Image (cartoon, rainbow, N blue to C red):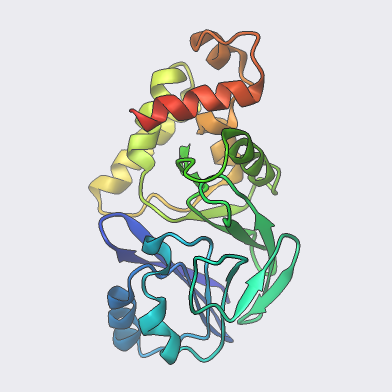
Length: 251
């Protein structure tokens, strides 16, 4: 049995709770308060915590939660994260509550950013702030080229992989995508579906790799019409990505 639930934090953060018959694992608990409320209400214990990167809205709950967990806090090689029990690198395998995850280094948003990918029961990816539904994270510490290559790593995962990202940004992201990819029928259909979910107070996450390839403009930098629309017909895919990321920063 694999169940993945979201715990809302701040205005738009998602803390993910992974549950199997063997226990409960959290991903990126940026705020302890909603987690404590949840585990008290549901009468559960937390086994492990997985961390994708050092930003406060992903690690802010660690100090309060560490004394309560039964297992370990696992995260990237980073001097910016206190409370880690184990630091992991690209290609390493970890096991939590009966699920095996492979670690994927995806620098760009931050230099220490990692993702956790598992196909033990279902294909799932916990990717923090590197890829969002319809978008990608701002490039704070890395380079545009690093972020582009990190997104390509994600793009090459199995198409049915469900993507669990760190924020509810989908509607705004799709508005940006439509501005630069207006003929994309998959994108138009997704926008309608997303608006229905938001109007019903439902999360728009997870999406899938297959869906993002069809609709996320940051995974479509090789599309000739997108290049033409940006005036970058003969430019490299990385240059197209860089232009789009700059435009999104001021969108």
